[in-house]
Image 1 (cartoon, rainbow, N blue to C red):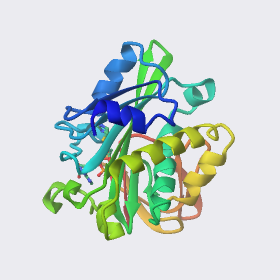
Image 2: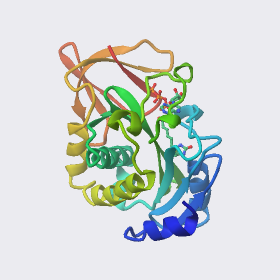
Image 3: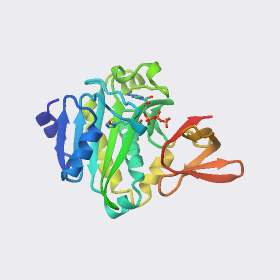
Image 4: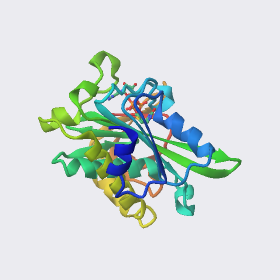
Length: 257
Ligand code: ATP
Ligand code: BTN
């Protein structure tokens, strides 16, 4: 879809602006640069292909041309969003889980930033912040979704099993319908971020609830505990033996034990 057609297609949504690319390095990089240059709240960068898509810690995120959704939304944070920027990862995840549900798919959120279907990763979320001194100027909410089977990298490139909407649904679906629906749901859940409703929905879709997982940071020894739920700021609460331990956002990895 070209920029003008996409603009029309997304017109029911109050976007601050739109930049759509056939191919780009990373939509998050473009969005961070645009945010520095005055992008309005809810401005969208999207691309048909990313050549340098990023996950956390600069790990590679693969986005082959025309097979996936890759987009980054620029948020100018309100006071409550500035107070809990980590909830923005949950905002993207909950909106996407809802959008997938409307296609008939049940998805879960592997804390902190992955969306799974049938225990396989279908999407990743990368929320990044832009600061001016101690003022949070913008949050870039980057979302990559494997829509067609062709978007799933070969197993040798993966640290966790992956899937696509097409593989899970057993048929192809329209990428841009999913984009429009997800953006609408981000707007919907954003209004419920400060009320606790977003956190509740995130909690409900949390993967491995009541199950034992291993959580670790870098090469440090893994913590083994049972997933209990989320804290008010989106941190993860684990039950380890007879006490609760809070795991904060950061370079954390989580796997079923
Ligand atoms: P964690 O270890 O916490 O689960 P992660 O594996 O999700 O982290 P991230 O940095 O969040 O790591 O995501 C990047 C990783 O995602 C890459 O290292 C690669 O294994 C995997 N990956 C890359 N592209 C895709 C894709 N299109 N679909 C699924 N997985 C992908
Ligand atoms: C992850 O699983 O670590 C997160 C992957 C995030 C990928 C999306 S695709 C759109 C945006 N642009 C990027 O370079 N990364 C995010």
